[in-house]
Amino acid sequence: MAHPDQAQRSPAVETLQRVFGYDAFRGDQADIVEHVISGGDALVLMPTGGGKSLCYQIPSLVRPGVGVVISPLIALMQDQVDALRNVGVRAGFLNSTQDFAERQRVEDAFVAGELDLLYLAPERLSVESTVRLLDRGEIALFAIDEAHCVSQWGHDFRPDYLMLSSLHERWPDVPRIALTATATETTHKEISARLNLDGARHFVASFDRPNIQYRIVGKNSPQKQLLELLRTEHKGDAGIVYCLSRASVEKTAEFLVQNGIRAVPYHAGLDKRTRAENQSRFLREDGLVVVATIAFGMGIDKPDVRFVAHLDLPKSVEGYYQETGRAGRDGLPSTAWLAYGLQDVMQQRKMIESGEGDEAHRRRQATHLNAMLALCETVECRRTQILAYFGQSGEPCGNCDTCLAPPESFDGTIPAQKLLSTVVRLRNERRQKFGAGQIIDILLGKTTPKVTQFQHDTLKVFGIGTELREQEWRAVVRQLLAQNLLAVEGDYGSLVLTDGSTSVLNGSRTVSLRREPERPARAARSSRRGSSAAAVELPAEAAPLFERLRAWRGATAKEQGVPAYVIFH
Ligand code: ADP
Ligand code: MG
Ligand code: ZN
Image (cartoon, rainbow, N blue to C red; front, side, top):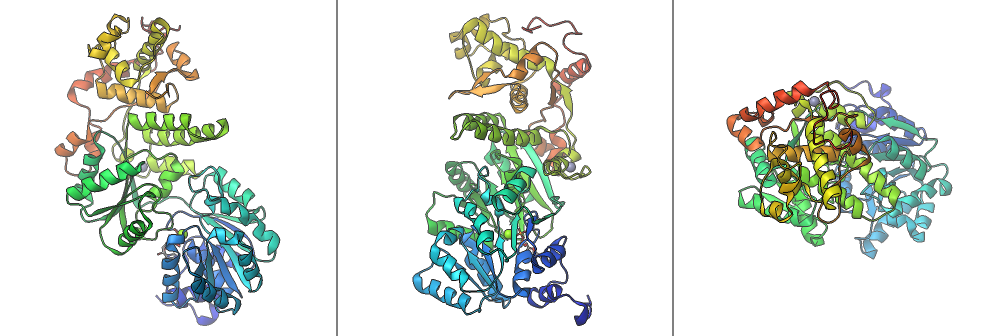
């Protein structure tokens, strides 16, 4: 490809080609770079892998002085600086891992004007000596990377980021560029407000990652399901497996290793050296799988991560999007796979209830979780739904699991009423609360020891739900929880009513449910390719049931005559 004449190239493009060896800017990069070079402030929202680094690196090279980059990623600073030095950029960093002599060398280079870029850990700025140091050199710009760390509501919150609002007061003439891959309207506004970036120009890139295939499957035996995925579709591929707890990280990594997969664990409970080693092995080796908590991954630039798997439900769509975004930075087809089940919903609802923070905090967490649950339960395109969450629109992608095998929804008002009626009867007639397991046993009319012990079999609702299988009832519970028509309470995960339950019971609200797909394990055996396509095929014995439920659609329970089990009417 012929480059334009030397004379016509802007200094930015010239630097891009000469220093970094790239032909052209991507997406908004050119506009952002020009804006910052001319001294403007910018807030850049660009997905992971979009190329945020060049947005501040190029202006740092073109403008006189040193580009000061604030980054929370201390573990990656050495790598970033090495990569820059390899292409001839004079870069250095200051963080807590250095000894005095190392720090001194970097400080001297800064003052002598021998640096193009200086990476700073945020806590450095609370040290007065760092501020004095910065006063002694010329600053080209401040870049605030991973700017969402200023958000007190996200899981990446760094208190030191709050101080960055004062950069502008101290150095009013130095342009600032804040960058993040997190981009809901709220985070966006919060970054703007907390960093004093009111006058900044906003650059919002498309959040679509077309090469990532989104898939969310029902969770049965997650480790085995994961192994199946790795063996059938990702043999020898590098990938990340996210688990909620350190214990499940350890267990899952062990399980994979026992089954011949090269896997290493990563979580904050491991000692520093093991963590650093596992991270650098992941970056350097081919085809290594890291099993990790969400402590792993921010800022990691490994292009060929072929899959990101979640064995537990992420707490928000933002988290999910960021984590899955680490797949396929090279633009090649990659998989985002999530296994999700009733237990996830119960556990997360409980964690929010019993967690720290005030009521407003809990409400916010619940809102985040609800959006994530809606994504799991949607019968529409996953990608469209993710983009909509970030305020962007898109056509159905034709590539996600729901596009490839559209799941059906059915009118689940009657099953919902039966289930809620059981909760009500237990409360009203027995002053008792039970978890999903026992309530489903009652609906199915099972005479388990617990059922006999509590004389559940004398309840009017005993055995009224035999038209659904246990697994299908679990799906009903899960979806009612997701829609806030049912809630969990206490240490034993007792099911209780919500404000919305009443309208279901009295027939003024219908409930649309996603039909529970066939067990993926069985589906995978019947079809080699795309287990998702087979996954939604209805088991023969369930077909008549759904015929019946479909016939109910459109008519409310009231119009059909209120069944005996409906308590409010
Ligand atoms: P982000 O910080 O947005 O997640 P990075 O800045 O780490 O992304 O860039 C991701 C990858 O894309 C890097 O390997 C980078 O070199 C590459 N890249 C960025 N911009 C360009 C470009 N204009 N042309 C080619 N490659 C690019
Ligand atoms: Mg980055
Ligand atoms: Zn789709």
